[in-house]
Image (cartoon, rainbow, N blue to C red; front, top):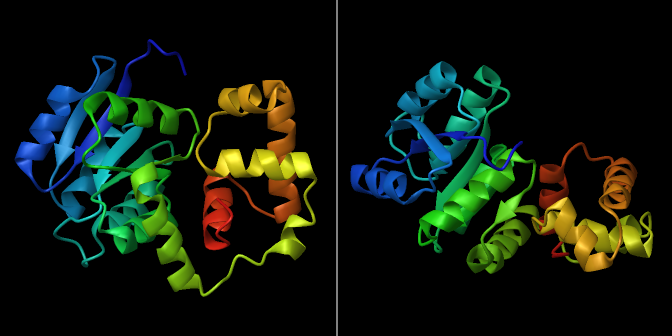
Length: 220
């Protein structure tokens, strides 16, 4: 995706003031094609507009009470190319975990600036998983509480080489391939090769699943 190409987005939040403020603060390269305030409205708008990225509040009225997670589950099949970036407040870890499990590609806090939201939306559109550092501790705790798993994942990590483990942790934290390559002093092509190997060895199909796998095992 070109850095100069407009990125079509849909803003989903039940507070009109927040929607207006976010729309005004987003970078000029972000093309807001619509807004929605409820679960049912969001599903309809995604199906109609097919935005590349949905900026999705995790707390939404309507539907069957599932909030943002319900939007992802219902809307994703209607627009397979659409990706979902959750918006949350720092004390809503359980809701964030739920929306990530539903298929959102990441989350950021509502205190993020317009530039930060714009950057996160672009990274999601490019295939990255994006997570707000301020919520990392909450999410780690929530995954541990939900899954009941501990950090003892040695037998699974043994499948990966030392370099693959390094790449895995950075990718799971939301780093772009170029950032991983820079940090580890390797080529982007080598990063891609390692990621493919990691996904194959762990029997995972996407970066999103890799992030959830690492979070559940408290490896980040």
